[in-house]
Length: 231
Image (cartoon, rainbow, N blue to C red; front, side, top):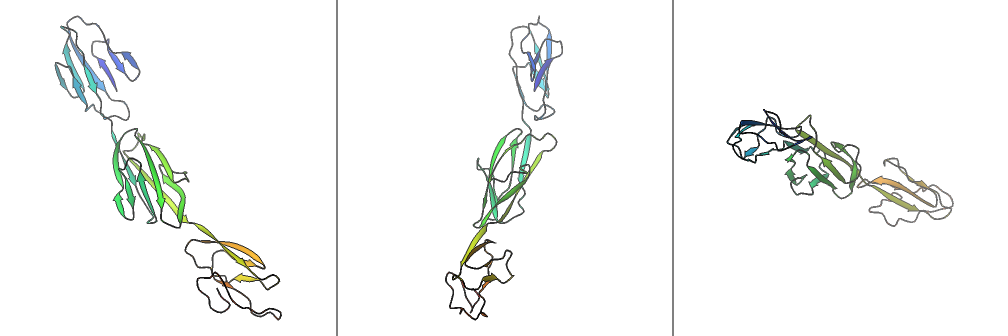
């Protein structure tokens, strides 16, 4: 903020560099004016005044005097508006811990505070992209400065998606192709060796053809469950 005097001379802070002036015994009234990001009107504290109220301080300059105006920063609420139960967001200062097993999702910080947020997805998921004030970030960490002068609330969310897992299929050389049965999001269609990617936790159903005159299906290995020529 800035402090000015009614009689001229004092213009101190936020671009003003005149913080002392020689007066000749008169009554001087000082006015504190907060700048953006600080409480308006002035609700801070004065010290060294003969009398003070609100943004004004009065001093009679019958001797050298020292006056201090202490400004109070506005508060900006950081709200973690989670749309997924598959991730937890925490802040490095320990003031936010928001997720399926915790509910500290909002905290009021001083304006211009810097907050580091960490997204921790559950097993099998990964961060896709942050939204809100962290929009565009695809890493697990978002470093955010609360400097919005148009709103006293900043909102953050993060999108998570299932990780892709690779299924590899090996087939006997020259044998008919092992193929996907069409029920999975990505096909595995191969001859000797092939692979396909599937969402974490999804079921991949693979079928080995039986109607070939030169080959006889004998069994699977590596499957969770099998049923005949389907694994």
